[in-house]
Amino acid sequence: MNTDAVRPDSELDFANLDFDPNFADLGSATSLLIRVSGPDTPGITAELMSVLGLVDAQVQDLEQVLLRGHLTLAAVVDVPLHPDALFETLNRFAQQFHLRVEIDRVPSASTEKGVVEAVTILGHELETALSPAELAAVAAGIAAAGGNIDRIVRLAQYPVYAYEFRSSGAEPAALRRLLGEVASAHRLDVAVQPEGIERRAKRLVVLDVDSTLIQDEVIELLAVEAGCLEQVRKVTEKAMTGELDFELALRERVLLLKGLEVSALDRARAAMRLTPGARTFVRTLKRLGYSVGIVSGGFTDFTDGLAAELELDHAVANKLEIVDGYLTGQVLGQVVDRARKAELLRLFAQAENIPVSQAVAVGDGANDLDMLAAAGLGIAFNAKPVVQLAADTTVNVPYLDAILFILGVSREEVERADLDLPQE
Image (cartoon, rainbow, N blue to C red; front, top):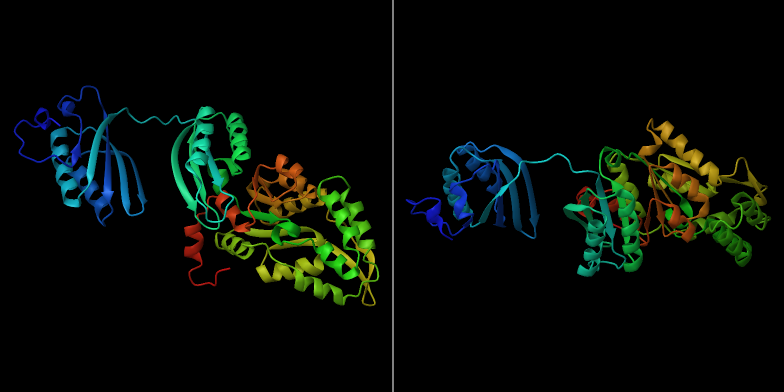
């Protein structure tokens, strides 16, 4: 590099500084981009700001990324009155910290970025990194929709890899369509949400219970006790896919349980299994200030215990009629069906004094569709095809805490909050 074009009388070694030798004539340039890279050391950012202050360079933008101990720090500054003094001080700074510094002209910053979207990508294999081909497909989908990637952040390596791409300028409908095609082709979960105050203002999460918060269908656990599992399972499947009205299906299945001893409820409760990551998911949400509720087409004999165990804020389910220690085969009161779940979501939001747009709903069956549609964000969790098509986004990994990544919470944040607590 011919540094004499900048400082003819300089005896400085500019080996660590990369800049245009014609910077002595900056013409109409009003801003400079300074990129600093190299091994991270405490004090680098403070020293760079001191250097810029010495030459009266005003900072317009500043971003910093640390990746595996390697620092990338970028600053956009006004061209100072004496740019040659800036080059000399930056050179000494680079040599002091063993860094590489690049300087380029850039136009004045524009505030017009268009619509900004948060694109979250979840892999499907446990602790298996997303491949370059998969990441390339997401990036190409954003570009094809007219978007530009402003930032990429890794959210998690466990239980699955998760990344967030911050995109601006894309046409929203095209972005969702193209990334939906990418998700289908590569077996990924890709969530697209407007990035802004509404996303960060989410304050309530409402979950379905059977096959969502827990791995089981409670009524099937009871059917095992009653010896009618296959009959109940067939009706359950039709209800969850939307082939049967949920209330009629519920009453038909509960009638098959008539005469079951109440002690069978205890055995079914003992067989019930939380979904992997459920405790972490709820605990983290509570620590972040969320309210968490459950609405279930199952039964209070199960949901009341879950609410107490997980310290949930809201819980509503159906009530089985029990007379003289036996199930009568009837359900008491209003059935928690598809419409009732959406109504309960609104009631929970009202109780928390928040708009329903700040609520997240999570479910897997057709009876969750109205609730998912009513929420500000509806998530289909390992759901039936009809639900996946209707939901805002899908999560098809068997870990409930992966939903945290959709909400922008990183695994590192979860683990920092849980340092003193037993892990799942």
